[in-house]
Length: 130
Image 1 (cartoon, rainbow, N blue to C red):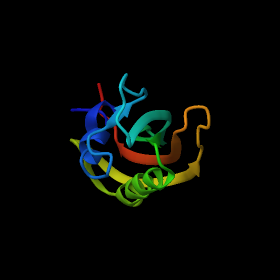
Image 2: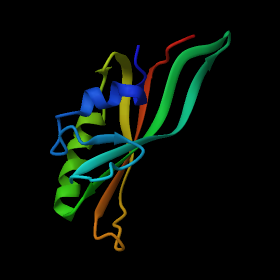
Image 3: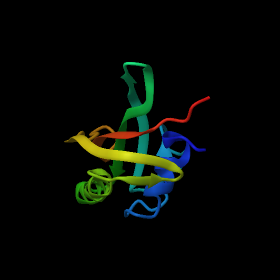
Image 4: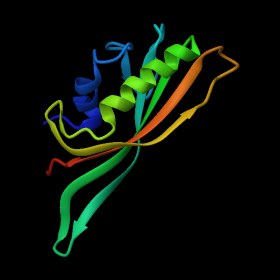
């Protein structure tokens, strides 16, 4: 079984926005083509019941949309928001109970001339057990 950040998120998002398959974990490629999306896990809350862990994880995933034009960054971020907010189903082979966008902000980079839009999504799913 893949993990959410180990292929599940890419499988779900790839080809569904103007960024196409330019969706990367953590780092930009050496010769980037824009727009693109970088994602990283910020933290993970794990559920507990009276008998111990319940097997549910709710990682907060940061998605950074990078573009050479602010309208392009906004368009891809809006596509991501629609895909993620309220989604229930599979991301790759990871069963997702609920995904919701919990933050959405601009953070342009004047030193690079690039535009960035940041989305944070909380994606609750059943976590693989060892």
